[in-house]
Image (tube, rainbow, N blue to C red; front, side):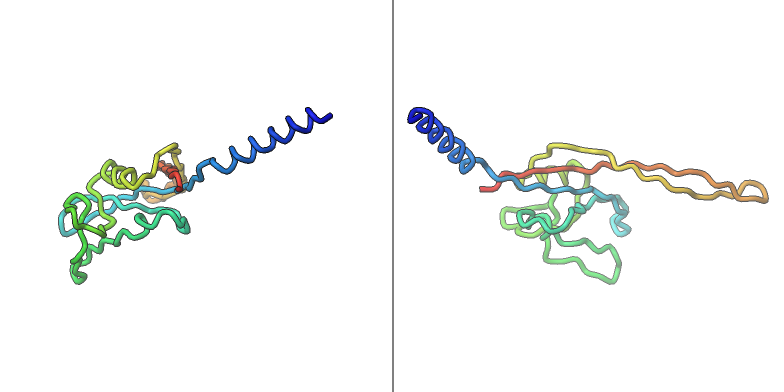
Length: 149
């Protein structure tokens, strides 16, 4: 009986020590949405991350870019024009690849991409009548994880 209890004690100590050294992970779900920049006449992408992740501060700190002519965007850097002293960036990326690079440089690891499929309907005039038709669109949803120290 004593050897059994001894091995049982060793087993429990091994299991508990393994559980204490396991790394914690944080997860983040986001989308990369496109928007037209009227001033520069091109499309840019911005990161739309799900809120309330305590470990995604650098993503939530991205400053929204305003393309209205009466709003002045100043004092903040674009990611593609970053310098060594750049601390904050606009949520403005020239491509989806550039946005994913920003995310990966902040220690987020992409582990899955799943398409989000949306459908709806619209109508179009055909002769004197309107015809309903189904619309279908798909966009990627990115799933990231980060090891927490």
